Length: 552
Image (cartoon, rainbow, N blue to C red; front, side, top):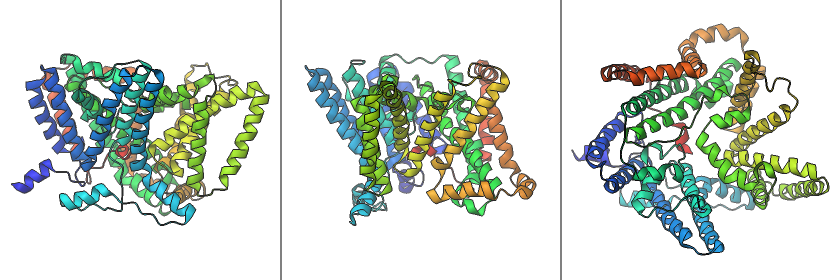
């Protein structure tokens, strides 16, 4: 009995509380049961959902719960201080304090190993990373964490970005701070979107805290549809092709033919979409069942006509966040600002640290000085370069948001180059304004393949692994073995084909299916849901896989 209670209430790193586990659905039913008793009392409802969300995070991330609480409490009081400050300089001081604390927490837990290894490499030191939280957890609770490994708190990039947007929106005068810690805590830690987004703006979500519960029959049907769609994407498509092809290929590319490597790469493009969008589909559905609306995070990204269009469709909450809080403050398409050059200097410093070669610093300084001189002498060149720097910096920082490594820097840089090349190409392209299906087909084909190519660095386990993959595709494709491979992996390829066909179906047709489900009687929804859940969980061939974006 005691062991069962421990399993229910204590954190276990082997069984995190994720949407695909049956334990989560039991948890959610219990949450809804008590929610049905409290939903009319807004204050109690918000306190209850905040506490429930904290428990969810504890079951998912363990004692990192205290990091979430710390960030929440600090920014709650700083937000009030910003609003009360009488002078602009006073407001700026409070904003600077908030950003310093939040970004320090983010950098310490996400980039600590990178900084430690870099210092040791550059200066010949032997500093070691010590996870003090794991040490005290082992001492007090009897856990067995590795104290030499400091993993980032689950979803830290998501909830810190939410608190940053809250602070900056108060400073800009776009919103007023909430007056209750429980309300702010609920906004930061609402469990459906806490660990993998979408990133929710305070101006979008906080007003919902003070609205009466409302759930129409159409919204109920929509919520169930989104949850089922997310389960199919994640378990039936994403996890199946990952376990049966993608993970094997990326773990050791040189052991597989170029054809298998290429199919693994195309499979990963589908997997990462199904995994991430599947999570946000379920998050949107779960939140809607409780009367809360989360923003759309994906819009058929592989239908994008160019790289810029892709980033308007992929991880839309992050793209809009980077645009509003990074790209536009740097100057956007109006030109560079001091923030641009500060960001550029920091980015170049990160590249120097990643390379471990201090001699690159004066080289970058010389290149920077040369560009500055030409920009001063040629005003038209200044505007072109400065606006493109803003864009590249945004994409590079977006890459580093995912992790401090050359892999993510290259991935972010390639996406930035893709957008810049399109900006130049559209000025001379004779097909830019054409809506003919042949022109659109080639635009989508080129964009999709370029985005898939960049994923070599996003998914690759090492720089050597990415080189091995490309070498296998280019020099050891194995044309003669393709028929045998098609037979060997026919289930994987069938699921991949199904996934891509569903993605590329016309939006109107998919909306028609969704509307039919939403309008169907309850008993039909129950039958469809039962069949879908049965098929999805029967397709699981191994242990449940964590969501890819939990690591960010």
